Image (cartoon, rainbow, N blue to C red):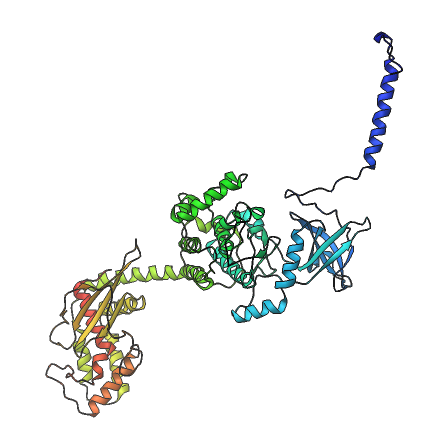
Length: 579
């Protein structure tokens, strides 16, 4: 102001410029004295400043822990490797991790107290014992405490066992998992959720990033209990303060209302399984609007079939996912999930693909690539090969001359030799000298029986009841046809005395594989035949002129597997069975 006169032409611009520069310098000095605010995470929590390598923390039990390198950052804190202070391990072999957050943050406080109350080693061991499990994906509580840095910044920390990679890293590489991997993960997560629910808590944030794998790659552990809270079974009361808590993409319908429920945890698992199987969630483009996502999830719960079709577009929806989703979406808000039935859904799906529940996870590219085409298990391949053999054998049977096997059996029976071993030898010799077509035919009978496509059992003294099972390859439905065949007519081939009729239920017939008199397997054919020969010959039982056994109430002939097979074989040859 002192430099400015009424006449602006007399302004000394050089002095004004020096004055402005001096003012800027003083402002910078003053700003340097102001303390900078700590950086915040995307979720709004204050992030801790870096902890120096080798810093020693003292827990609530006065035990000391040495800090190693940082291995990651979360939404509210940072994670470091750690070991006991006196340990001489190398840094890369530290067996523990320490989660650290500023005292002003809340999530680690919640998680720390959850572990202290519900993750004790003996309680986890007791749960495993009662459920006959060797492992459970619930991390054990080790210790916790508070720590103050030299600049007086105070932090809380939680010590946990160290795991290997997280599931999210594998999902990023492959884009999706194999059916075997998904089913194993679903079973292990079901076990963990049941344990958490047994403590009256819910997890509320299950996702791939919160699932860690152990060193042997055979067990998945659910971590990050920052949103864990108690559930209430008395009333369903929405809480505006807790609305939309969790990861919006996977948040359950109940969590959108601010109500923690057990069905909500499994609903979150449903959405994760869809992603792991290669599907997409319809609301992925609207994650910035929690209410819009909530509305779409409500619609999905009303029409599960349409929802899953939308998720998988032109791909086939896995059957286990349809069954599991319908089971969860139909639960009442306060109902307890049926953990046993949920496990059965995944276990049955594993048996369908011929895979075991135990073993290592496979995240290789080869295992994932197989998902694009339906998986054919070794068991199914074997069945398909067997069916082809049966079809080939049946074609050869058509060309073979008809000859009643009942006559051959009767001639052997009439032999005067009382030694059962010799009778058995004659049976074996007869089978060796049989024509190639008849051998093929008997093999096809055995094959059909092993495949559960053919059943036969005696109805009366002179009848055999044959059940033919035909499977529709398109629908998977099994149609049964029942026929009664007479066995005591030796003059000609066994004849069908009852016309074919569809029998969806077989009724109260005898078991096809158990002798009702002796309670033994019908597979003991040679023993049954020899024993019956000796008894009949020793007791001088009479035979009729046609060399066939006389009807007797207590005769073992009516249960002879040889006659059953003969009658069934004759029937199949007559009807040229190819199915």
